[in-house]
Image (cartoon, rainbow, N blue to C red; front, top):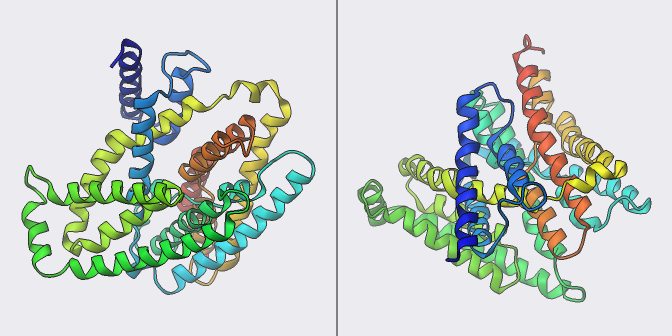
Length: 391
C-alpha cells in the first residue's frame, strides 16, 4: 500500500470515529449518523479539504458497505408480520407514489430542470427501512398497529425501486433481455428464500445455535459468503448489487431459526453499522460536489423542490390509505416517516451520475434533498405523536 492510500485510509477511519463520537458527546444533535457521515465525507473529500478521496481500496470497502446496508434491510423483512393490510396498503401506496413522482419529474424534464426520467422518479419514491427501524425502535413504535404499517411501507418503498432499477439501467436496445433476466432472478430469489426456510429446521438449527456464539461465527461467515455470492451473481447478469444484497438478507433471515434472528441482527449491525456502512456514506459524501449548488440558485432551489416531491409522493398515499388503520396523528406521522429517504437515493444518484445519465449538480441536489428528509421528517413525526391523541 502506498503512502497516499495509507493516509487516505487513516482519514476515512478517523472520520468514521468522529461521526460516532459527535452524537455521543452531543446527544441533542439532531443529525442521524448517516447524515453526519455524508457531511464529514464531503468536508474531508476532494471538493473541500482534499484530505481523502475514493481510491481503489476505499471504493471496494464502500461497495461492500452498500451491500451490507441492503443485506441488513433484507434481513429485517419479516413477511409474516407484514402480510395482510400492511403489505396491501404499502404496495398500493408505492404505486400511487410512483405516479405522483413520475408526473412531477415529467414536468421538471419538460422545463429542462431534470434528466433521466425513470431514474429520477425512482430516486424520489423510495423509503429507507434501514434508517426507519432504529427510529421506530427508539421511539417504541415498532409494535402494532403502527409498527407493521410503517415497516411494510418502508420495505416496499425500498424493494420496489430495487427491482425496477436494473431495468432502468439496461443498455439501450437490451431492455427485453434484461427484463427476462429480472424475471428469472426474481424466481430464483423466491426459490432461494423458500429453500432457506426449510433449511432453518432440523440439524441446521442445532448447528446455528451451537456456533452463533463461538469464535468461528459460522452463521455470520455464511451470511457474508452469501452476500458476496449474490453480489457476484448480480454483476454477472448486470443486475445492480443492491438487489442481490437485499435478496441475500432475505435468504439469511429465512435460513435462521426464529430464536437466533435477534443474535444475528446484532452481529450484522456490528460489522455493518460499526464499519462498512459508514464507509459507504463517507465515500458518497466525498463524491458530492456541492460547491456548484451554492453558485447556481436554480440547483440550490431544486433541493427544496425534490424534498417536496418526496414528501408529496410518499406522504399523500399514506394520508389516503391508512385512515382506517391508524389515528389521525399516527397517519400524519406515517406520512412523514414514509417520506424519509436516503440510502437508495444516494445509490441511485451515484450510479446515474457515474454512468452519465444525470449531471453532477442534479445528483448532489437529490442527495441533499434526501438528507433534508432525514433531518426534518422523523423529528416532525415525533412531535406529531407527542401531541394528545386525535381520533
